[in-house]
Length: 370
Image (cartoon, rainbow, N blue to C red; front, side):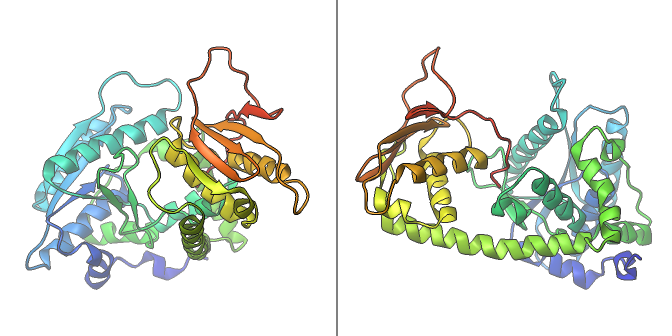
């Protein structure tokens, strides 16, 4: 049975608490597609702004991907709503050739790229998105299915770096992450605000809609969106402890500033004595710093770490020499140290695989590092 509380509109006091951390910023970009979640985000942000003596400037941005016939009409509807709320609005269009495969991932990347450009142009450092508690539950399920590690099961955080921003200082803010979608729809219904429905959100060709369809079935067995989100919060606490433990291990084993291309060295004995999860994370951190071929997947790191541990041999005996390359980083284990440095350029006929004493890891597993 549905909890009646999920059908109650968001009150003004609740909205003040949801947006409270954003007080004092000069400008905020609000990502609004025109669907119920982002429309509610815009409406709530505008109402919250009216209660403030020195409110931030709100800029509603709609990205028209041009993938559906109704997209231009929906962007125009958002513009009209923003105007009625006295919020500045911009429609940005994803132009150019669209990929035949991986279209949702490509559209997501384009959306964040356009939103980031709009934020920089407006002098804003924060982009508000309408991720809800239901989205958090879907994320946890999705990552569980992909064999995620602890980081992934922590789900989405209330803030995050913009994926395409490359460390330029922009932040995604998810003020509605603890709010069930049903309450946002109830809020719009009470305010008599219309919204669009994107049919792709129920298209079973895509993974997200398939997981979305599972949620009511799982809820009947007790695995509700609220409980999945609670799991993410609890795992998030564990993730924070692990991160601080890796920080401490790094400070002891390889302190100081690391050169951009390496080498970064860790005493072999001390590294091999670390608990597996801490060793994995420290290894990932060094490889991410030194390598230049993307992000190592969790499965690749686990395979590499297992080989390093196997090379350790018997307790008290020196480890055997081992060399591996992974995402542009060359990892060498010797008797005295584990060294990670930038791998030499690839040869055209370079051997791949992980067999033997020396080799290159390929993307054989699709585990989510997060």
